[in-house]
Amino acid sequence: MPVTLWLHPMVDLSNGGFTVHWSTVIGLLALWGLHQWRGAVHSRTHPAERLSPRQHLCFTAGVVVMFLALNGPVHDISDYYLFTGHMVQHLVLTFVTPPLLLLGTPGWMFRPALRVPAVDAVARVITVPRVAFLLFNLVLAAWHLPPLYNAAMYYHEVHIVQHLMFLVTAVIAWWPLLSPMRELPRLSYPGQMLYSFLMTLPMTIVSIFIVYADHVLYPAYASAPRLWGLSPLEDQRLGGLIMWIPGGLFFYLLTSIIFFKWSASQRDDRAGAQVAG
Image (cartoon, rainbow, N blue to C red; front, side):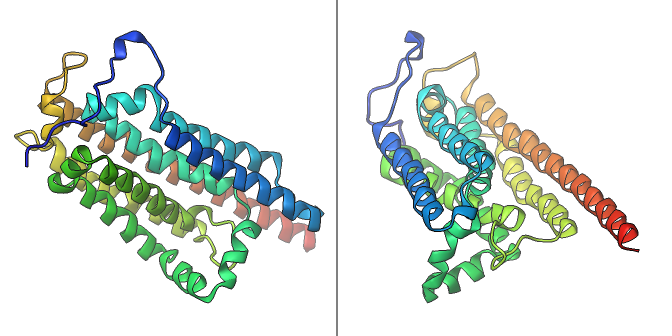
């Protein structure tokens, strides 16, 4: 089966327009509307548990970032022109959107789902740090194998499944760091630091596989019009480097932030002990 670009018309970037895919708009508006509606209903019965301005801002920002990743030039470049653009899109969908959505969602919004025994049982398994780590990284690695990646480029429906799997497993992967629920708690600060560091390793392995390949792994981009003078192999290597270096630096920065939060919490504990004494 020859692998080509989408069977849809090529998007011309030279006209400066902003393409919008209404299926993503409808889905994102439904997600944002559900969040707002659930918050409004809960606040009427539990006035002390209103959505905070910070939660409103984070969730809305997560939805907006997802919209920008799935529409406009990021979408067009990634789908029609450059593997590099696709790697930028994937980093946004897995490293930016999920933490914003989690930071914007209070624990009480998830809690009713845990009353369903099957949901509770599954949630308690998949949010265990080692399971969350494996789920995300296995999905990430599998979708960058040429057969699966090329299938996603050839069949639009498969591409949608790819993005949904990235988003879902990324939310699960972020859970040990940002869980809003005591029933499914976060790791301790030292555990979060180790977890963040380990997250860089599988991504590095996948990136090395892409960067050091001596041939084009994803033929869909070989037949695409060239942007910025990048050959298909240069584009592939640059995309791998974007996953490798900014992706790794992101988690090193996160590890540093967690360390400073841990240090601050220890100072607060010592100060509280001195006051109590």
